[in-house]
Amino acid sequence: MRLVGISFSIHDDRGPPREQERGCHSGHADVCKGVRFQAHIGTVGNELADFYAKQASTKNEIDLPISLSLNYVKSVVFKAITSDWQQQWSISEKGRPVHELCPNISIHRLHGNYFLNQVITGHGAIANYQHKFFSSSTVCSCGTEIEDREHLIYRCENWTATRGKYFPKNFLNRTLIQLLSHKQASIGIELILKRKLELILETLNS
Ligand SMILES: [Zn+2]
Image 1 (cartoon, rainbow, N blue to C red):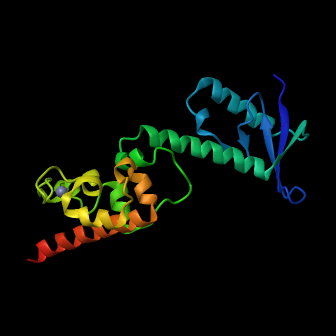
Image 2 (cartoon, helix red, strand yellow; image 1 turned 60 degrees about the vertical axis):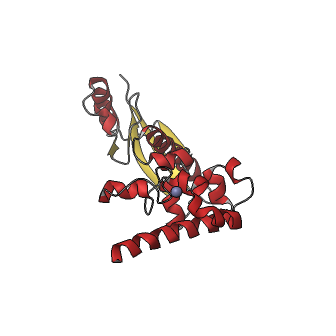
Image 3 (spheres, protein in one colour; image 1 turned 180 degrees about the vertical axis):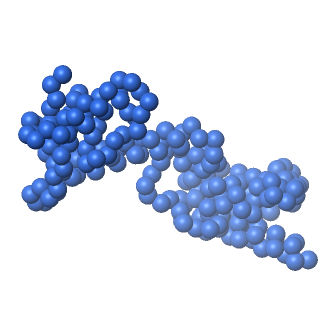
C-alpha cells in the first residue's frame, strides 16, 4: 500500500490561507488536525485504515495539497448537523405537540411568548397538562370535553367572546400555527392563556 501525505488547508474566502494543518491519507482522509473520528473504533477495516492514516501522517513530503474554503466547510458542517437534527426530531417520541405544529426544524425562533408557547407545547395552564402533575380533572370547566389546546382555541364556549373580538371570522378553517401567526388572533390566544393561569392561581389561593 502506498501511503499518501495530504495537507488540508482551510482558508477564509476574504483572504489568503490563515491556517494549515497536516493531514494524511491511506484510502481514508479521516485524520486531520489530530482528530480521529469515532467511526473507526471497533471496526477492523476502519482501524486498519486508521493505522495507515497515522503512518502516512509521519511522511515528510506532501503529495497532495487540498485547499478548502471556510464557507464551504461551514456549509458542509451545517448541512450535516441540520440533517441529523431533522432526523432526530422526526423520530423522537418527545415534544410531539410541538412537532405537530412544526415538523421541520429551523434555526429561526418562532415565538418567544410565555403564553403562546403554552399553546405550542400543550403545556402550562391547560387542564389536560395540569392533570399529569396534580391529578386534577382533564375536563374543561365548560363541562363539554377534555380541555386540550384545540378545545381552548377552537371550541370552548368560555372564550366565545374573546374569539369574536380577536379571531378572524373563518378561524375554524385556520390551522393553529396560522392563528398563532395572526397578529390579532395571537392577542386573543394570549388573553385566553393569561386568564386560564389567573383562574388556576385564584383556585389555589381560595
Ligand atoms: Zn371548555
